[in-house]
Structures are given as structure tokens and as C-alpha cells.
Image (cartoon, each protein chain N blue to C red):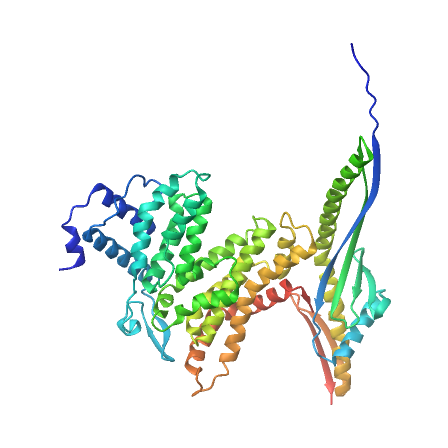
Length: 371
Length: 173
């Protein structure tokens, strides 16, 4: 008998129903702001646990296969090229999103605390709120399925309308527990060595399927961030922080891919880099310099140059991708990275090749180079 | 019944000044050896009225701003300055000094922002001017390179519709 049939016959209490509602909100299937009242999770019924776990697993599977799952793409398997769609068994090679108790704990603790946190007075008992937030999201020992669930929850948390400080703290914990969430959201204020260490498990052969399945989501998330930052509506300090964190995140990810010899996973980076040059900064380097110079609140040339350098670093993701392309193009038949190089060169030429000149001239202009 | 009070105001004044610099990194193509390229750049700037200053730097005025080419011809620094008078008053000298200190801070911030605005507003023209100078240095370098290869038969300079500058030199070797 399937898990669905097991719990389909069980009648849940109102509290248990609310508990599942919180899960639905964490999974982005309803809003969390109108969830109030006790959720009855002190001794969850096994059928409730089965129902919740099943919903998490289904949502994770949908998240991995929903966008562009039908499109055939090439990936490396043991250094050899192979092609297929997301659900093709030979590409999956036995991959199953692995869940630990962390996912269930996030759901049950979220059900217990999130509705209460949303209605709490921000000024009241800060220490107990901090404790609650710290306990809400387990960050140790998470696995591939948890990472995806956390990434979904990271996107959905906003619907609970939590006080800003609590929301920030929970989002940070979710990113700590999920390298995927950290990659999608360009973890702010983290250095590149730390980011490289956090992203490394994503290219482990046991987990890389997750990244292969979310290519479109990655490119869309980074592109949305660059477009938002590129509207220049924030203070210079905030813009510097956001462009800086995006640059650090993308360079760290590129380091990890190159180090793991998985440049086939760089498609989202290629799409993003082309989009930055042709869309976000489509006016070219001199126009970008002028726009950054005109950001309200810039008080000195040094401050302006710092901001330009942060933008230039994001643009340089494209420059680096092109340099890696040129390096891998030299791999000859029989060389260790030949197959990877062939695959990557084809993708780079297709996605970023047409924007090569724009990327290079943008990088030079943003770096202030004349000549 | 009313009572008259006599209030003595103390007025203090000072002068605040500030400056800011804009740096442009120059990247010269290696048509000729590095020192010859740098010399050509200096020659072109000298033709435009730049003068040799302290420490071997070449200095000139571009868009009304003081500019200086570093001795290694690797960067151009443009400086803008501003100054202003500030005054403040208080019921005692200490009050007036404290008020002056606050006024100086505000005036300095305002002057600094104004200087930055002037520099960044002039920057596109400055970069275009330096681009032209470098282009002239390239043309001269190409001529010399061509002459070193043989007899120059013809030289044609054209600008394409996309703004690309093209120099065609025919050399008999």
C-alpha cells in the first residue's frame, strides 16, 4: 500500500490540519500570514508525520523537475558526456533526494513557532525569540533533499510576514543548512573561502544531480538579483554590500565547478553573465559608470570607485568564464578534461560567445581602464 | 514690569577646504617597446600643452581640472579642489567654537560631495580625451613600426560607421 493510501484514510484534528497548513506555507503552496492558533505538534501522530514527509518529498521532486525538466541537456558522468532530460533514469544514476530528520524538524518546529513569531511584539523578550529562531532550523547533518526543502522554505518564508529581524535570522539559518539556498540567494557577508567550502558538497557526485535539475532556477535567481541591484534604488552602502555578495557567491561557485572539473554545470553562470552584459548593463561600460556616479548618496570618488569595483567583479564572472573557455579549448583528445572542455566550449560559445565583446569592454570600462 | 537683558554674541569664522582625485588606469598596446609607447604618449600630451612637473610627472589641465600623468605613464590622476568660508556664533566663545566645529563638518561634507560631483560629471569627457590621446599615440607608433619594416607607400586613416578607427599602412619590404 502506498504512503498516500496509508494516511488518506486517517482523519486529522484541526490542530494537525493547521500543522499541515504551516508545511504547505513553507512549501510555497499557501500564504503563511493567516495561520494562527495552536498547531498540536507535541506528539505528532505517525500518520501526520507520514503525510508531511510525503508532501515534502513530492514538493522537492516537483521543484527539481518542474522547470525545463523536459529539455534534453548534456552532462558529464565520470568525465564522459551524456545527454538526456531531467527524469531520464540513465542521468539520475540512482539519485534520490536524501532527507534527514532536519526536514521534519523544520516543519514541526516551524508549525510550533512560526505563527506565534509572526504575531509577537518585536520588542518583547528578545532572548527567548533568539533561542526559538536558533532551534527552529537544524543546520547540521542535512542532506540533498533537505537542501531543496530549505531552499523552497527560504523563498516561501516571506509569506509569514515575520518581524524583519526574526525573518533575517531564520533565512540565515536556512542558508547555513542548505548550500543550495546559499547559492540561490548569494549569501551576504560571507567570504569566498567560506562559500567555496559550503558549495563543495553540491558538486559531490552523490548530490550534483540537484544542481543539474535547477539550472534555470539558478540563472533566474541571480538574474533577478542583478536586475534588482541594477535599478540603483538603494543606498551606496547597501548596493556595495549586495553587488559584493553576488560577486563573491558567483566567483566562489565558479571556483568550485572548475576545481571539481564540472564546468558542464556552468550553464546558469553563462546565461547570467550574458544577461548582465546584454540586459542589466546594456548601455555599456561608460553608461554604467555614469549611472553609478549618479547614485544618490555617493559622497566621494573613492566611494563611487568601490561600488564600481563591486559591479566590475560581477561582470568579471563573464570574463572568467571566457578565460576558462579559452583554456579548456586547448584540451586535446585524450587529455583529462577534453570531454568536459568540448561540452563547455560549445555551451560557452552558444550562450556567452555573442556577448564576448560587450563583456570585455564592460570589464575594462568598469575597471577604469582607458586605452 | 519688564526687564532688559543684554546678550552678547560671539562670532567665529574659519575656512574649510577639501579635494578629491579621480584615477584613470592607462593600458597601452605593445606596438613598440613599453618605454617608447610611454614616450609617444608624453609627446602627444606635450603637444596638448602638458608640462613636465615634479618627480617626472606630466601635468596639464583637462576640462578645467588639474591632471597629472604618472612618470611610468600607467595612470592619470585628476584632482579637484574646493574651499569655502564658514562662520558660526554663540553666546560665549566656547559655544561659538562648538557651533563652528559642527558647521565646518557640514560644510566639508557638502564641499566634498560637490567636488565628487564635479569630477564624476567631467569623467566621461576626461576619459574620451585620454582615449583620443592614446589613439594618436597608437597611430604614431604604427607609423614608426611600419617605417622600421620597410618603405611606407601609403597611409590611410578612416573611421567606420560604428566609430571604429582604422589605420591602413602599406609597406614595401
